[in-house]
Image (cartoon, rainbow, N blue to C red; front, side):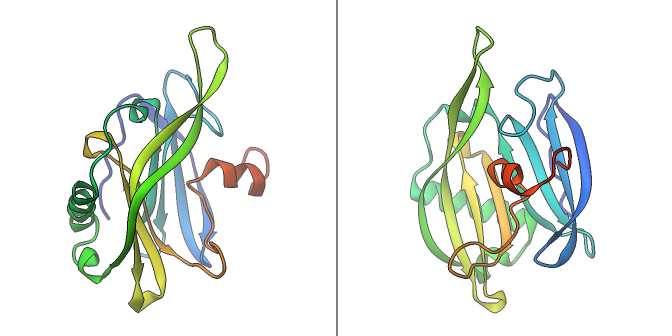
Length: 181
């Protein structure tokens, strides 16, 4: 298993067993130790690991620090994706067919100076790929400064995404009983 670097200031909020594509996985969610902007829709660092082999299936880092800065070019995005994938799963990059590279946005809620919640955008460049030998999809989203914001693999698609979205708070809000994240 790849050892992920949990961002400074984040602590484990919970870990739970789930199913993803009918496989047993563990979902880990880290939130700010300060309690600032925690909860669904807020800042978090989450990842999913396959229980059978400890393989990293995906992670996402939603943090307001990723909302500013210049996004990488398509060439820089491809290079950062290759560098990341070579560390996470050597050989995977060469098997992937890149479909496109384009801007991708996610929304999170943060509190402003008055304590009011406001929605901000975390943007990155998405390197989306198809893995023919498994008939599924993978992607890496690269943010400002070449920071990896999101990685997902083993994503099944059939007229839309079929694979569970354990890393996506909008999906969790609609698909998980209260308290399950």
